[in-house]
Image (cartoon, rainbow, N blue to C red; front, side, top):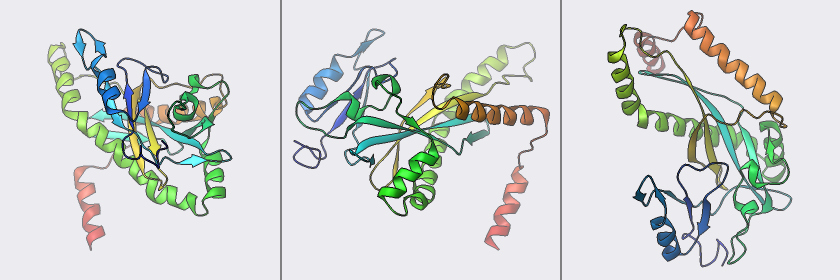
Length: 261
């Protein structure tokens, strides 16, 4: 049963808690099996401790064999109140080493999981190579990526950060009240790795947000990671030193008025 056949619309992915690098992930079209597997997940004395997501059955694939591809974008959060977020404009992509098939008894991990530890050879590529391969298979794909996929990715990042803002701010205020100099408060920042899947229409779907993402040492992306890290740190230093100024509320309102006029 292929995804475009009788299994269409019934594929799910289950993720075990506190796992990474593709460990503890399974895919199924069998609802009974899904419920049995989910109910058996235990962590910290709790049942049903897992994440279940709808599987993207019409995922974007790249030739020559039609391999599944997804992406990771680095996101820098400088402040939670107000939310100040920077997304690196050069995400990198992960390409499965096996052709994308979903048949009974043929659900190979190298066809469905793009995590590097699941593959024998390097499977990560930079933005430029991805766009070149996309354009070769879908003329106009580059423009579609920047006009459709990338804005959707940024929207997903914004919504994810805003959805946790209240909890983070509450914890921050609790810490601030316990300090001897409460006006100082936390002065930290956080780097996240946001993973997105892409479907055949280049619509992005948020998979997860990773704390302490892989910094890619001794990989084909090591130079990319060094450049990206330096750029992000320059933003942090610039903000703390006052060299980088954020627009005030009045500036933003004035900009909106000019746009409307």
